[in-house]
Length: 93
Image 1 (cartoon, rainbow, N blue to C red):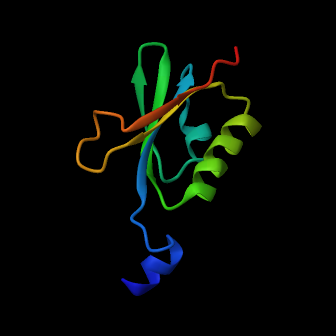
Image 2: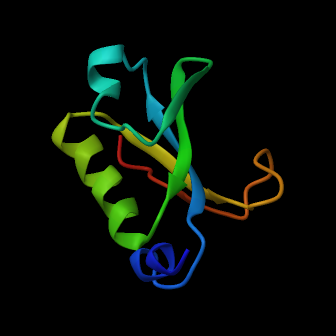
Image 3: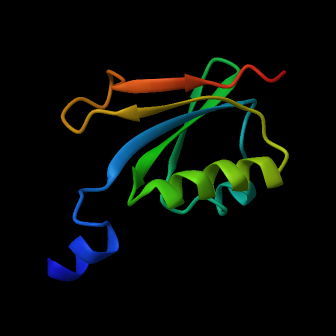
């Protein structure tokens, strides 16, 4: 347990949800081993726990490198994965 605290800066990993335009196939999902994908209309939701802010920026960078359009991301509360705690819209079309 002490080693986990050092890795995450003493904090629990936080759950995030990323909304990406369009479908994401299994090959592309290999770039996001800690996230699970589900469809939401025409978009894909990537959901999972990230240990710190660096990992959050890493996911956003990977989405950009792969040419995926990030529409929105949210930090989910630890108790209720359905209700967002905070969110950011990405209005770049």
